[in-house]
Length: 368
Image (cartoon, rainbow, N blue to C red; front, side, top):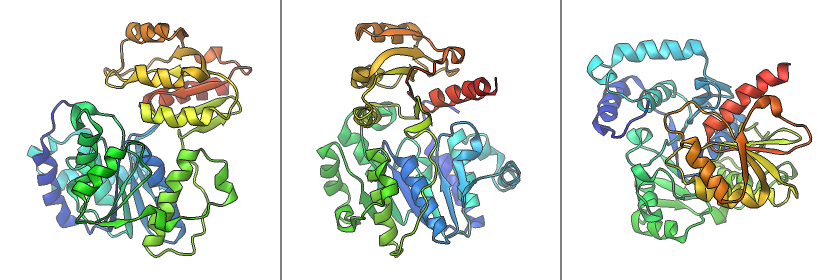
């Protein structure tokens, strides 16, 4: 599941064989640092509401693997997964099956299940041009907000990260609102010979039901409406889908968000300005994330931090995290769901794993 080096020939050879059994639909590839999941789910949901047959492939999941493959409004069933797994095991040689990574194999399942549909909304994992999802040619690329993340794989500058993501664009593309001007400079250098959909030319008047959403989700919706109009869906009627873990108000005093990098922390901090209250931050982080910067950004809205346990070898050592928290003059303690207080406000933030572990505990807590 975790790896330090990827052999890209394995996914390419595997797809070369599997593609003979697949009739790919119109492929919309989503790359970027933040906003891929929400943009993809909005787009897939609205396409479905336009009577299109659509599969949305995303990662990671929060509670169950099936969340990664969403087909016409439902997560893929265990039965369909098992059947597809059995078919792929028969199609691909053992020599390739043994080498495919967890994400690569999951991507192949998603591609196989997209066969014959109208649209495949395909979310990249951590990269762009070398991501497993880029094994298929995309008809349209959505480039969401780009920031610093996964530097070990993608490079340690905005220019390097933007370059590898944008080189995944095969044909038409649209660029979402960006924080760093370097992204737009790279766009001009790399994608000058591609067909660009200009976001500003498709400004959509958001309905009242969208005004209550966080600003970053409103911006993601603008990109989605832009793409829908480009695809020819002019009379767009929609019902907003429920998004798990995206500034989700689990209760009156608990907000969940799967964000995990400084860019995500910035947009969350922007939303917390309007809350006019301070929060207990339920937090943990992977060691390769800039958790110091994340905490610096969120500090004005945090009264204390409670560290939630996450069983993952990539999690930062608790002593190191506590030292950083102490350096900001904040109090830290270990999180325990039984100590949840109705009079306190909680922000659960740090990664999909943080939200997953909180929800598992919360569900047990709520049953009591």
